[in-house]
Length: 240
Ligand SMILES: Cc1cc2nc3c(=O)[nH]c(=O)nc-3n(C[C@H](O)[C@H](O)[C@H](O)COP(=O)(O)OP(=O)(O)OC[C@H]3O[C@@H](n4cnc5c(N)ncnc54)[C@H](O)[C@@H]3O)c2cc1C
Image 1 (cartoon, rainbow, N blue to C red):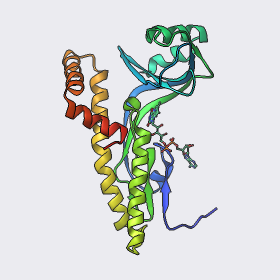
Image 2 (cartoon, rainbow, N blue to C red; image 1 turned 135 degrees about the horizontal axis):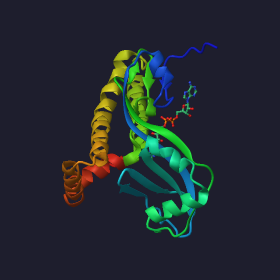
Image 3 (spheres, protein in one colour; image 1 turned 60 degrees about the vertical axis):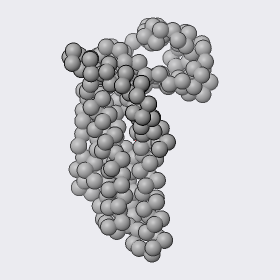
Image 4 (spheres, helix red, strand yellow; image 1 turned 180 degrees about the vertical axis):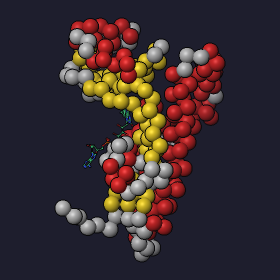
């Protein structure tokens, strides 16, 4: 079926086939890791606090859901992922509870575990003639800072504003000239976050002594130097 439209906006994820069909290159960073996601029920309330635990060789995120449920996100080297995927529920429950220091009391898996290869991607540009990329199709972030979705919303808002301004000036909102404004504005937001996050991930994955010292210093600096803390929080929560 052929559909005619003035502007096509693609939001088909980080492996976007629309992006590829439009000839837009994308750089991909493969972390060699697998992400395992599942839902768990726990005895104690989470009080709406999200945790990211950096253990040697793996990270564990415990993200609050409605009620006494949390979304569990484990990032692990791909060659070790099967051992977790194949764990019996009882062993898995005990393992997560122990790694989380029983902060939420007893933990029980609720449903299935799912696994995904972990890679990040950034399109070289977010537009073509009568075509725009948004969401993960434009930038697929590493989930460590949990702001990929927010960044997608920011991109949609930037695109909507550019289109609104063009309509108000009676210009062709789907022309390359107008869409390149969206591209420039959004690339200015995404590039520092994308490369900054990847750098942070490399720093936290490295077992070298210099990396260990650097990340300790970076954490202290980020936590104690208020302007830096405010800047990071503003970027991640979209509160500017
Ligand atoms: C493990 C993990 C944890 C995350 N945690 C967080 C977090 O805590 N906070 C946060 O802000 N972000 C998080 N993110 C990022 C967030 O999930 C993504 O940024 C967000 O889902 C991107 O939305 P999207 O709609 O652009 O793409 P997607 O969610 O990938 O959706 C794309 C959709 O397009 C569909 N599609 C693909 N091709 C076609 C086609 N040809 N025709 C029709 N449909 C098609 C797909 O089936 C899919 O439904 C996380 C990501 C991962 C992997």
